[in-house]
View (tube, rainbow, N blue to C red):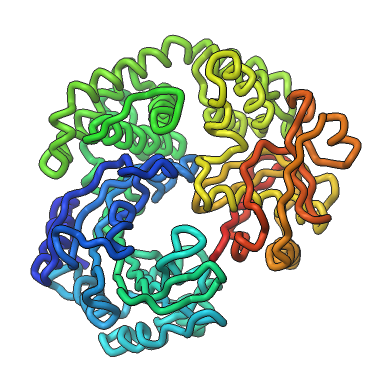
Length: 600
């Protein structure tokens, strides 16, 4: 493989596609244009959706760029070897021009040619769409990969859950994709047949690139019709690709972060890799300062606040401050680290230099504001935590007090609680927050209600699926199971619950079957308002009932699920798609976590 710097990889990618007739377009803002349903640009294709739907792009029908992106759905994972909240996506598009034959040939050339990435062909595996009752198997893509030189035993097929994109909503453009992976363990990879990719042990493959072929339109009645204009949409994560090419164990060990790491080492007297806890703290600070720098320096730059994008920015900065204090970063250190980020990216994103004064001012202001109360808030938290045993819960009023008095976003309180084997009454927090907001700004209580990142359609559907999951777990595993927390983005749901062990494969299959049976039955989701007492008498589940007001919203899904909830929900279950449990995790003693997705 060819060792590259971040600068040379960007240039190499763009020049490759420029030579093949693509117009190089600049990165769009991190703040989506005219799209109130999402807070940030989450993928390279996001700013190009109108053109993928048929609108003419002024630069033509062959495009490429490096797009700034932010995803915060898995912010708790930041600190491991690969997760970042800010990242750059290398992408190219065909708007009704070339299609599978050309794109796959170019992908193979860019990956394997010594002139470009120089990855040995024997180290590459690809996946293609396996086909189902809606759309045929993508043999065209598989055949082209083999013609290019990929070993047939390294061509795998996956269902819609693995090799399908879209539509963005319930209807619209969609189609199969083909993903390229680096084989990290040949012994395991070579044991697999073409339909066993998902059975590979963790670490066998590492995805590097994805080509999406939008060739169908999903209609309102669920049919997949061929599109008149077939598009190509690709995405290659710059940080992950650098990590692979340079043989690094982590994205944080590439040239992107080396000067920032040196600055943190200088400020703390610690070494980046001296212990697991220190390394994790370094990574959180590195990621969050970089993300905050780009948010503040964006052409539509935002500032910390208690709502929408500003809330996410505030949470990220304050999380960086907390982890920074754990390794001895002094007051004002975030700005010192930010300056190394600006220096690194100044030639690629000159807006960071133009807005450097604003970045410095807002970082210092937010760090100072939180630092004033951080020590007191930590003492208050420790006092509360010391009175609770493993598996117990910090009540919602206390969580809101930590937020309102000491500036701790509830997510930080949750994180600290997990570190001590505790959980947080999130619904109770939301009720306390809503009560507080009702005294000043009516309606604002819905901003981050029910653990939802936003009220986008996909998020709403996943919220409804969470109710079905909760009910199914009670039926399959134990009637005593109760929700201990949730977080829902447009991409996945995360559900925490009390249980002593992970689910067995048989239990996972049964839970999925129960949920999908209700979805297939297309059951209406019925909302009724009633008194809390009536809801209790009628058997509705309310996890933190003492925190609700006198009147509550109840949601009934057939005879399967009855819950008190603030909403929003799908109108009927048939809209949801196919429910799939993606991952199980331990949260703390007696608390487990399920991450699940809906596949359209």
